[in-house]
Structure formats: structure tokens, C-alpha cells
Length: 270
Image 1 (cartoon, rainbow, N blue to C red):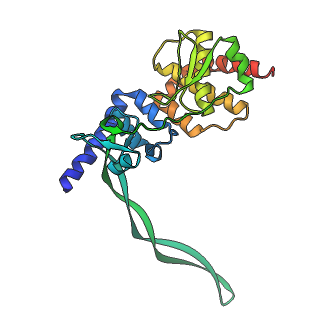
Image 2: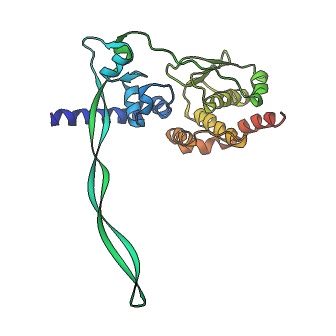
Image 3: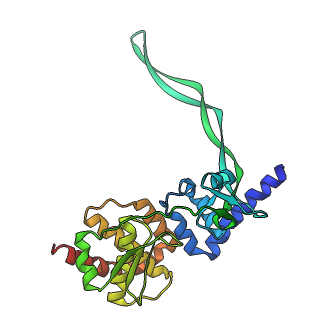
């Protein structure tokens, strides 16, 4: 059993390493959460394992049963890693001051405290949605209203903004139809796609996940949000840009400035 467990942990780690080498779009996608599925509470590492197993929804056997679905006969599980923590004694030193016979004395006291430490990982079997059958899962529906300060830009660039159920991306911008599709109500997702549209209008962009274009869109979106006083998850923004590389960010500065300038000039008029 120990050997099996080691192999499963090794396989999970190799899956993640493979993602960084050959699937950058899945690395970027794994950063985001927020679609009301059990995997939203998983670590970035485990969400990446899930995406590398070609699914956006994976759950344990009992979790699927609670959702009204059954794991198909012969379906093979893949494994995510759950941390195993243990309380261990750790010696710590603290300094105390005391007055002895009129003089201040500094004493160093050593004591033992119990500290929770990560000691290992436990492989947990989960199954893909595609390997289950039964009741359809309720699709998350949401309304998204374009904030008033951006409506003029949407109209000027002849854009359409639509919402859809999450499939593989939280947002897309179609170069041909000029449609922004959102699978998340988060403002930063809308701003990212809006910045793609502005970048396309100003400079022309290509289809696909082009690193330079992604950095321009994400960094521009974060700057615009900050300038207009919106609170956005900047930790996610930082991870997203780090994934595509800070070299691309330096290359993108002039382009970002033009995209941000285009948007801010028009929002300032409202």
C-alpha cells in the first residue's frame, strides 16, 4: 500500500510538471475559482491536476451520489493530494524581563509548544463528470450588467456582451463577431476581455492565447480597476502575469499605456 501511495503522489506531481511544460492555458485557467463546484475549494495544484485530466468538474464517489449522478461502471479515478498534518512539539525561546534586587534582569526561557506541521500527502480518488451519468447538474446562471462607465466603449467598438455557462474559459473575446462572452460575474473577467477588444481596435491582435496579448489584457484590466476604485483580486492578477512572464510585461508597457488611456479618457467623460 505504501508503494501504491507513493506512485500516486508521484503521478500527480508529474501531471502538474507536464502542465507547466506543455499546457500553459490550463495553468492560467487553474488560477481562477468561483463556479460553485467542490473543486473551488481545492488548491491550485489539485485544480491543475483536474484540468490536466481533461475535465472542469471532478468529485469523489459519494459527492457524485449526492449530486444525483453515478460513476459509470469501469470508470477510472485519478488522484488529487490532500495534506496530512500532525501536531509536533517544537522548542521555542522567549525573553522575559524581571527586576531582581533593584536591577533589571533579562531572562531567556525555553518552552515546548505544539505546532501543526505538514508531514505528508494522502492521495484522494476523484472521478470526472464525463465518467458519470444521471441527473443533469444545475447550471450556474447569472446576470451581468456592464457598468455604466464602460457602456460607451462597448457601443463605440460595436461589441456585444453575453453570458454563458462555464465550459473551459471564464471569458472570451471573438475577433470576428466582436462578442465578449462571460462565464463569470467577476468584473476583472469583463475588463480583461474588454481590454482585448480595445487592444484589437488599437493594434490588431491574433486569435489564441498569445502571451504578450494576455499580459496586456490582464495588466490593463488591473490598472483600470484600480484607477476607477474597483476592488479586484490582485493576487490572481499577479499569478496570471507571472505565468506569462514578466519579460512580456516589460515589452507590453507602452501598449498597456495606450489601452488604459483609451478606456480612462472615455470613462472620465461620464
